[in-house]
Length: 399
Image (cartoon, rainbow, N blue to C red; front, side, top):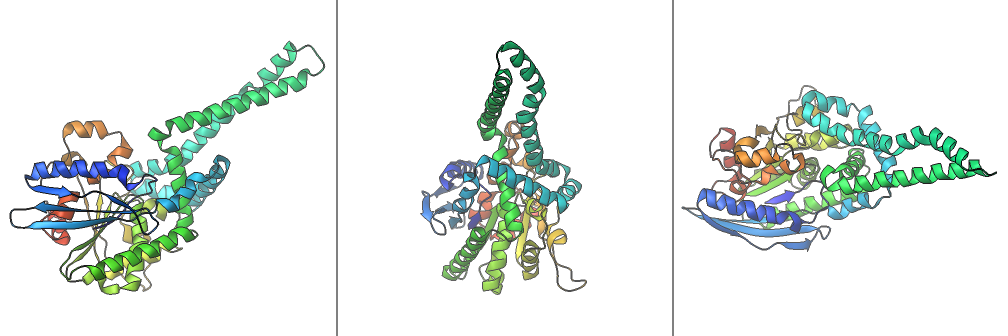
């Protein structure tokens, strides 16, 4: 199983305890034995790729799986190293680009909750400006008048302006520090950075990421060549990793078009897709061609979404919206698409806790399902059925 994660600066070891905990829950629910190995980090490409293995003993057989999490933390670190003024300037440019391309309107039309989420970064930046600038502007006449009146000397005006400018700077610093303090809960700067990243990738103007896409494609082709003929190969992605995975799979298909028909099986799974985030900038500079190549390849593609997850734009049919077929009248197939049924996959208590904790809820795709017949990451990757058969079964409400 090859996994491409979302736009996340945290190393694999940060999220691995969640996978281990949910895997243990899966074993208890299914009443089977199994284990996950230790995490191995620092692998290529980028020195941020990680790997681990696992096995589950089912009544009829043992299933063994090697997991590879492709890394790109080293690529996105540069987004977080920018100065705050540079970040603001890049953010304004990104928000204008997606607005001019009609991305906000399209997202609101297809899924209002996801559309509101897409508006969160620009609205948040606007609120930041108002909180930083409005109080100093409104209080400026009062400060200048009162300080000037209180100082009975020839430099009263200079002193009043010094107080105003110094107080304004202190206020803006306080607002910035408050924003930084709230970041672990608000994810505001993280989202601002991710929009900048998407603006560059959508315009085919991110050489570092384009190079990582090619390196990831090489790794997948090499993994397929090294695997036994009957080994099932599953390519999974999540969140912002879903649109990058489209680019990666298109690059894989350029190298080995028949990989999707390998005897052991090849399946492509996108979880909690964010196609509208990147596609909102327009698909004409590469994303549309990549989407077309994937759809035209005949790959078994399953697109999993959750209506309760506003960070997920899964109600959009990705091929119809973003593919750019060359032939007039050409009809390209959509992926198999269905909801993971978020409330039914977890206990009522857990769902109540996560219902409005949207960023935590966005990782529900990695939770063990408490009910059979629904998507389960661990049954997909370590279950007794081949991935394609399992995904088709869930589409029909069966395990």
